[in-house]
Amino acid sequence: MIETKQKLLDAAERLFSEQGYGAVSLRQIIADADVNLAAIHYHFGSKQELLDEVILRKAGPVNRERLARLDRLEAAPGGPRVERVLEAFLMPMAEAAGQNPEFCKLMGRMQAEGILTEVVVRNFQPMLGRFLGALRKAVPDLPENEFRWRVHFMQGSIAHTMSSDPAPLAGAQDIGGFPGRIERLIAFLSGAFRAPAVVASKRVAGKRVASKRVARKPAKKLGKGK
Image 1 (cartoon, rainbow, N blue to C red):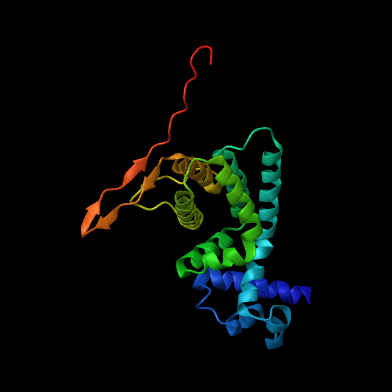
Image 2 (image 1 turned 90 degrees about the vertical axis):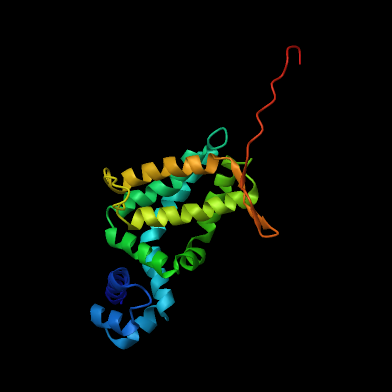
């Protein structure tokens, strides 16, 4: 039974990463795994449940390591810096990616198909909630809506970084593999979360009002004797 389930998971991961989730049928997975028709419904019940198990068998250990690193960060004196929160979230993924390149390809496929967000919501919510909470504490002066926009941009940046080679237009050399990519991404995202807030432009009576940056107020200096 365990061997049959493993065959189905291996076949599903391979086919989903090569062709995309939407393009692969359960019959294709059954044929590739060389198991009988009833096996897939016995072990998983549906195609969506099969996809979730494909994701969790690789992402489960990564998420446990993420939470362990976050526990250590939060137990240390003082609030964690943006870089350290991002490092705890992203580096376990980078370390696992070198051993599972097909899984990274699968995540990229799901992003392209527009289903990655719903997969993440179904399977990663408790862990993500903790990390977003820690990240929010690291940038307390950032307005809430601006913070949420930057989380949105971060999601796309992570998916692109993990599933694609550097674009020819960028001309970047992929030195250091996935850990090297993630080190650069952490530096990029840290700057993004620390950047001043932006008030988005609006159209008033058909005219465009330019965006404005909202600078953070400098700390007041105390005079002598105060």
